[in-house]
Amino acid sequence: MKIAKKHFLLTSGVVFIVVTALLTTLYFVMPIYYQSVKTAEVTREFTQVSQSIQGKSKDEMTALLTYYDKKNLRMWYALTDATGKLYYPRVETSDEGIAVQVSPFIAADNERAQLKEVITDGDGQNYTLEGEYSLQPVSDASQVLFELSPYLLFFSLCLGISLSFVYSRISTRRLKEISATTRKMVSLSPDVFCQVNGNDEIADLAQDVNTLYESLLRNMEALRLENEKVAESERSKAEFLRMTSHELKTPIAGMLGIVDGMIYGIGDFKDRDKYLKKCREILEEQSQLVQSILAISKLEMQDVEEETSVFSLSDVLEEQVGFYQTLATVEGYHFIAKLSPLEVEGNQTYLLKAIKNLLDNAFHYTKAGGEILLSVDENQLVIENEAEKILSKEQIKQIFQPFYRPDYSRSRKDGGTGLGLFIVQQILEQHQLTYRFEAIDEKWMRFSIFF
Image (cartoon, rainbow, N blue to C red; front, side):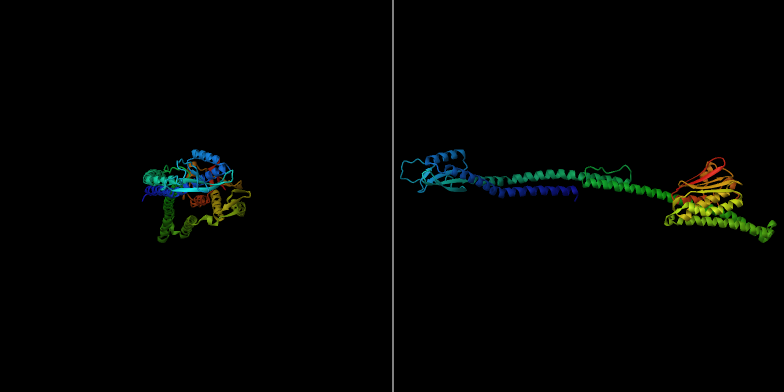
């Protein structure tokens, strides 16, 4: 059964039951209440009359009783002496020997009640004051109410049905609107929402539905972005595997040709000592490439946040400065380090690896006799070098791609694998750090990391 129908039946029944109970209560309680009120009123009136004629003469008493009879018709008074002789009301008769009994001022079949009080006049003679009143109007009112009850019940039933119909429609209107809106939410359109009217439970329900829908849309958007990231990651992995295969295939094919030449003694390949050294050089290059690939794989599989800690970056780099100063002396470079105290939060191992890759890259691409600067200051790390060739903006955009090398370095004289900056990018992005690689003039390249 729908809520509107339930409300209609429930409220109709409640209205009908309440009206029926009210009429029944009035039928039984009203006579009792009316009798109690009327009895109290006539008792007060009778007491007031008896007190007013107390100690008066016989004529004064009859005059006062006549006055009260005219003033109020709710009670009829009678005044008799000790022998039963009636003094009020006066009855005219021609025969004084006939005794007149005046007791029932009300018809014998009427419900009545009497009050009596002994009155003493001014001469000390006692009289009896009687007051009689009728209860017939109470019975009449109950009878009238009983006769009208079917019509009142019918009216209450009609009124209850009408009010219940209106109430059931109004009370369920907002619920129907919420239900219709939730059906529209299936489309996941961002402009669909429930109207919030009032401050009751239905308004709370509408607000909760809106909050739930907004949360669903946010989660769906986050899921879509995550799916795009996963799809992009899969494409990147496929591209990385393709480029890795190409990088490995060419030197392996070249080394196989050298080995075949040595086996069969073809031409210059008869000089095995020379070409064995050449094969070793090729294997060392491929070993470095494999190590870089393994480092990338380990970086992707491991959550860097698991080993996150707060450490002094300047102290960690201070331990590496001696090695790079020695390397600069051997290579003929000028290496300068300026390290101010700086506390950072992250994976110390991976951050140090990223910085060392940047320093190695700077040493590989610095012109002969050039300078390399390392500085840590004001929540940033900066590595600058006098480059043998300044990269263009287009080259800088591609420099972080795996196996990418500028045209002038494709001979691998620097011994690089083409994965150094790609690894740096992966580490910094996992730490959610901002970085920038740029040419600051016609001689210098700069890499900045902001903590």
